[in-house]
Image 1 (cartoon, one colour):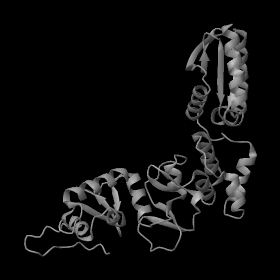
Image 2 (cartoon, helix red, strand yellow; image 1 turned 120 degrees about the horizontal axis):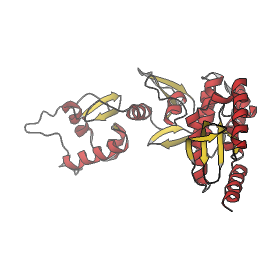
Image 3 (cartoon, one colour; image 1 turned 90 degrees about the horizontal axis):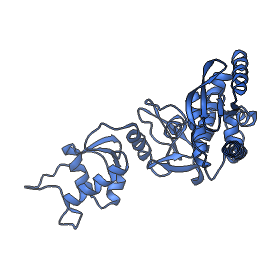
Image 4 (cartoon, rainbow, N blue to C red; image 1 turned 30 degrees about the vertical axis):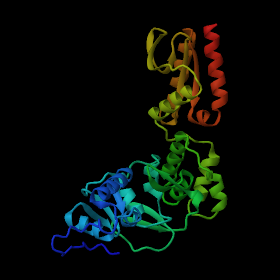
Length: 326
């Protein structure tokens, strides 16, 4: 089951397997195209064989440049130009059953880390030959620590955070935890479950400290917090405000994060990025006084309140908006 191209030396031979009752060339091409479309342009030899496409048709397509070898037993269909997801898929397929995208690459797929174009990280259950451009982590993954995202086998978001705890600094890890919480993706296993399962893994003290610190949201940008707040309003059936809107008070304009003009209600989103300094603290209180004196109600909402006190916050906002409408 090698990857050397097969050459059919029969006179007039086409290398297809019609006589053997196979799919026929047209059917084979359709099967390959359908599989490649689902898998970001990538197929595995074992998948083609399982689909009823024989070794000869596979090797003929390799020789003709219709399949392109990426890793042993893994091919790009039609051309070698792949998206990052295609390269992630190829890396996982190259390592067979039980392999999963992991660590920084999984973090990028889950959108809790910035997209990585460099080395691809995969966790495999047994030792494999090293491949260029890949970083292999050898560790059996229980079924409840693997899932599928965009058709790619990947460690669950909780397992991904556990792995990242061993290779990111504290600040980057905290940022990844915050983004994971913001995604609202849930696993059958929580991070706490995995910390109990793997109490001595590298980085677990840092991960425990972040979860216990109550400082979620420390690295959240203004746009992150705005997006999360608007999603929170939608989820709770609350009307959307004007965002980053100007309000006239005390003889000058203030730019406010979220404004319900009819209710004369303002919500300021307190991210640590822009509100953590002493000067910012004092400035925020001065503007709150000016807005209150002009007849506006001003409340402040933090990332942690959105994540941990969402039910209470939704009830309070609903009451404030209803009182204004009465």
